[in-house]
Image (tube, rainbow, N blue to C red; front, side):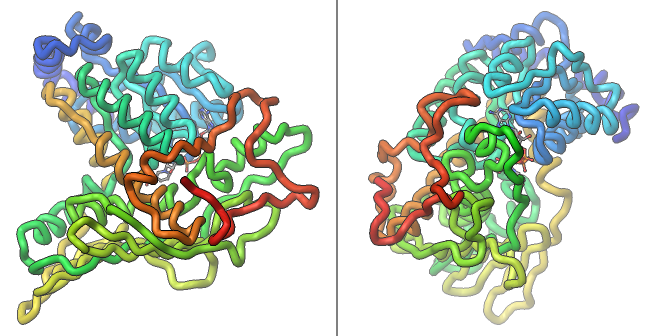
Length: 440
Ligand SMILES: NC(=O)c1ccc[n+]([C@@H]2O[C@H](COP(=O)([O-])OP(=O)(O)OC[C@H]3O[C@@H](n4cnc5c(N)ncnc54)[C@H](O)[C@@H]3O)[C@@H](O)[C@H]2O)c1
């Protein structure tokens, strides 16, 4: 990072930042951080909650924002001590002069998020397992903090409803809410999808969305761990924590599909299962899902997500219209093909993970409202709808899914508390059985 450049930009933006803060206050949304800034500080103190791979990158990207906001990492929180310590070391190695996290602001445990939220920061970065997101987002909004939260924003319908309600409160309080759908910030997505909305490929006929990969890490059970400690550590493989990979990863593509369609689906049906990833290390999630989503106007989105090695992989989204098609690679470029014309190639441009922070802090400095919580919540709900369809084998309607009372989270979040999902005598966890499993 070019810290010198950042400091210069920061000095030049100081006045506009103060102006922005008073604009927020005038709008009747005098948040704690707005008061801090209006009092003369142009530093934005952030807490990183969830110190894993994505969280560490997000913290550095916030610090390196191109908007010129002077961001300081002020607190760290994680369920586990070693994650906090390694994040402190790694982030300090990349941006030492913007890290001010003495031992007393390195919080550990399942309640660490609350301590980090309350220790004097202006913004929280919620980058832990998505199952904790509704609770941590509610706490941040209640405390008047700006939020960057990773996707997905929940793992079940009660969680999505909590996020929707807290997001409404965040708007009323004038708090910025950013959601980690980085593709929304990439120029090739913005330009290609604008062409769809401008009618360049004619009437939309169907959408295809893919997150096919070989899968992610596995964290083995450690001697002496409680079941809760094990599940939180190996969180990817438990629905209450990850939502299954259709929610945890494929939500990116489903979000783009909804963006292309300018709507959320009214129903879904699909099939899925676990065929390769079946041992005791893999909890309860499926390794493949195929879903047909239907929008109110009859438009279909065909969705494919697979975690199986040595198969065809793709992270991409495609729209097919009456005159042509748009093809977007998640990590690459976009192609726009119109019948009778040369294809248009749109290069990727800068990565969305940095841009999403640039855009967030630019809005904060300009005193503009900033809220990505609405599509963050509906895209997560779309992915949950897909999971409900593959787990049950039934046609599931959006309204029924959103109103589902099935809460996947345990009653108590203590290390020795009982988990709802438990291994059998053979160490295996039961998984959903289409045709039998109830999801509503
Ligand atoms: N936008 C993207 O491209 C992208 C990429 C990767 C991950 N993600 C998202 O980021 C989030 C984190 O993913 P990751 O890959 O960094 O996982 P990770 O496992 O590397 O990090 C998660 C961290 O959260 C900690 N944690 C667990 N429970 C916690 C709690 N109650 N409070 C605080 N911390 C807790 C874990 O110990 C771990 O250190 C997920 O929601 C994931 O979907 C987004």
